[in-house]
Image (tube, rainbow, N blue to C red; front, side, top):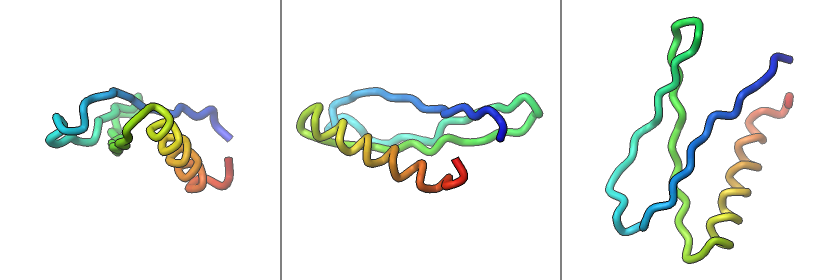
Length: 67
């Protein structure tokens, strides 16, 4: 299997200030493009956000059982 790269970005913002967000674009060396789906996780404290993030990461890797 080829070497893989997990592309991600994080930013912590006040939930009440968030109006909208868009997918991020990625340019590949072969000239093709791809998009990175953005997700929002809200919580009252670090523990809530961290737990949801870890569940999301676990679910993401379930899409790729060959890994």
